[in-house]
Picture 1: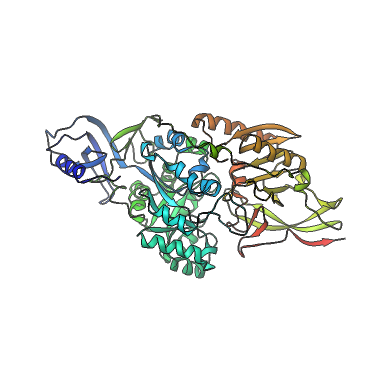
Picture 2: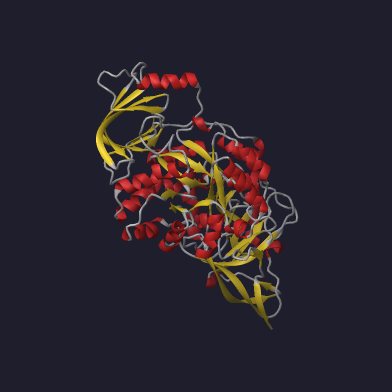
Length: 588
């Protein structure tokens, strides 16, 4: 928040008791993240900021609230999130994250940027000051993620990044995958230099890097990474000065393994933080948000004060905003979470800027807003799209094929090889072996490309699933047992302007429209959750065995997550950053 000299003077007058505070929060047990102390206290608040700890008796205030001897901790910070993946607008998202104590999101809005460019991004964060939580921007660094290997809806080049770096809301340069640094790609180096010149940090995405490669990555001024899967990977990053963001999303469940290693090895936590990255609304509502990362860590044996610091001051210091966030000290925003027990991260009341925004698990409604009409018209399929578009031509009796093999609870996959029968010059899905067709359909009306590969791990026995949420290009991704249902699923998404759909035998089994950029619903959170639950249940009736099939579907096409990705250009060898052949060998 920017304010002038007059407002600054008023704050100091209020701190001195010469002007009424807006609020005094009394009778609390203050959790001090600087001294690791917990002590009885009261907080005076003026103009959204804390202005005094333990103000003297008789201190003037417009309002006094009894903290009921609860623990007062700073509001929780999610250090890396793609809001779009929650399936909600920021306004609806507040309903589910704020009751769990999250008061600040560091947002990499690369999803809407890939669909609708800088205008779409600005529409997403417009009027964010009216929300019951704070948004800071991690400027999308890779729009598109894999130039020359995918079709995206827009491009954010060096000049667009420089423009976004000038925004007051901007915090950092968003995640950069290794290929941009190890490949010494000048466009991305320019983006890094522009960020460093603005005295901001650059966020990393160091998935699958060896210690030698991490040296190069760290030399490229990437400050953190949220892709650690093992404790050894976490240590490797810390050893080269890359901080670790401990992630717990819907399909990336990393907290338990990482924090178990941290606790067992008594690793210092000063360079560790929490993030969700990508988490569906249903999982947030049921489990929690950053609170869930904290609770899981505490349950494993982490000291609650350490978990609180990871969720607050560590994040603020790393991103150089500790003068505003991360502690309950004078001059900082009065973003406060009250807990009955610091071993149980279940907020009873949540304040943003000294204003109560959630109580007993219920958030106060956020101000609604309107989005431009063009953001609801982003799914445009080629008129030539047909069932034949999903075929995999092959010669001979059988072919040895690359298979994208899913790894449970992770977004990474492994490459497997399987012999597939060839019938009528085509390779068909083999649901009995859990080998399905996976296709990506260009959805921006630019070229009509379709590419098809093979995947294992969904368990689908009949029909098809499709999504217009597919990181990071967000073309339509379809998994299915037959070409006709795959076509019908893609066309259904066009009719509903994007979303998730399950189909079988040419009929819609269930669907969740996400018409805002084909990524988000404009419905209230609870309605989206209910419809998502129904859709997942319908998917299980088709044979799906995983908990979050649409989250998995949305990541499987990533050309930057090992080992294989799929875009509308074809099957991608992620390590070598190139298109690779689906068929390894034919046999007559």
